[in-house]
Image 1 (cartoon, rainbow, N blue to C red):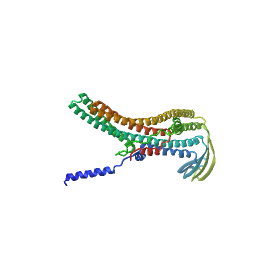
Image 2: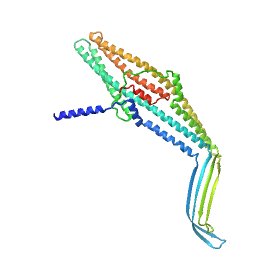
Image 3: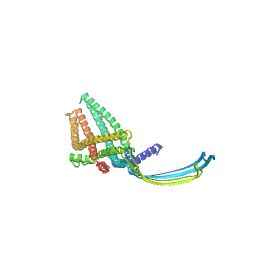
Image 4: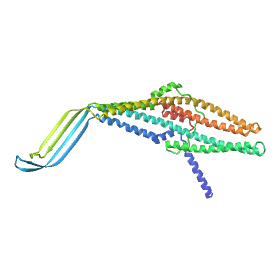
Length: 444
């Protein structure tokens, strides 16, 4: 065995072993990678963790605040008295002391309201994270199905190139023996050239769609699990648009976030208005001081404890409090307007998704029948071309119609799945189980 043969066998073994270890990436595995690597979901999670810190921060304003301070000074003192006749007197001594104070709020409406507002911020962040998880499911599934569709479109484009190459060869032979006119050869050549252009575009689309999927899962896509030829098609459950609208009004996560925005903005009005209200605190302190000298040359020690109530009443702040309160009221109205707009958008999206599922279901069924019909038409036209009752143009048109129906069927199946996910998302009911359900519709 020469060196070239050995090298060839080694390369073959490497290729076979590499292909045997290559795993097909299904939707469930892609979802696991997406959870680990998707930046948008991680950002929402970190925002949730940051929002949870608002509660202890607001609670701290309602709990006792304890402070301590200490001092130690070296004092040099010169004194002169005309009564004693002793002239100037210089003393050097140390002056020391410390203070421990405690302040416990009894009434501070702004702090009470801010604590309540902080809890709503946390609840909103939790909903936002759940919304990010749902958005990831829709986004990942869409990218996955787009990559599958791009693969299928490329396969169909390659099949078309092969078919039109065969038709061009047959047309050339028939022209050479005088059975057809040169225009039929030109038609076959035009369809062949167009199929090559479509194949080039399909290849670029496939690369782009694979890169879009990789952006989310952050791994190279070796092979995807394709959709099974037939999977169960069923209308939405419940099969009633009004019920889905009701579910969307109650459970849509974007609407729930908007409602929290309204509540948070309303609390902000109370916080700013509270600047007009008095505050009452319990104040306690222990003060100790000791000095080694003084004006009369003798040191002394002082120690005192205090306990009492402190009332602070704002009287005038230049109109700032009133302005902040009005600004908060306008912001509150702004959130109400956004909520109303989002409610209308959510209902429209719910209706569109519901109709989309129903329409895609009928479209898939119609296209499956259209493929059968177009295949029969292509076979009949090829037979007719052989016996002279059909032209090459008829065969080319039949081939194009069959390819178009196959492309439309793949797209209709993709849209059917995506509209199901979007419909469940509008109702706040999209979960990982839906990913697993779609994964059952893929070949493993």
